Image 1 (cartoon, rainbow, N blue to C red):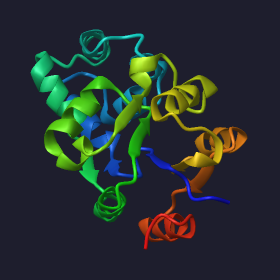
Image 2: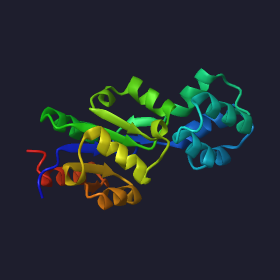
Image 3: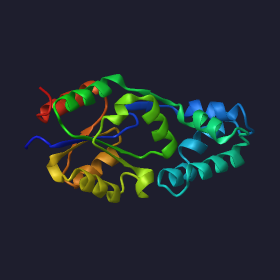
Image 4: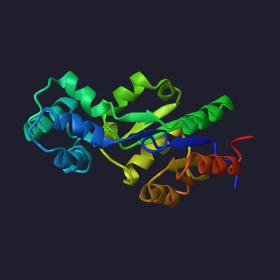
Length: 203
């Protein structure tokens, strides 16, 4: 199989780790909903799905969380509480840098939201070093919906085996497989580096 022309990275659990319990603890400390209930409310509920598919603005998401939890802070305080939950996965950041040093185009392809992206862009310089971004909240769909994969193909100008895609979720990888993409199920930075090298992209 020929070497891919473009590498597409998932963001969460691939380039950055995150923990919604950090946000839940902050919100719980100021409101009436328990920490145990806030964690699934902000990380697994239909509310987050609506936000990450662009059906809610950040202001609307903030208002709904405040209404449900009793969080009394203003929008700026909420943004800090909700979004400051990320840490870079340094070996993967370095892997991305190695690809960039070889002039290989790279893209971020993520189910995410405006507050998270704003925080990551402001705090993690590596985030600016991609050729493009396909973010669920900007396109009204979330992986593994094929609609979002079509956006990747449109933005990169590549299809099929010309794309190499890394993601930590098997269901997201499977849609890439169906479209003929080369894929890497990300488990550890070491395994992903080996897989990218095997694809002919790293010396």
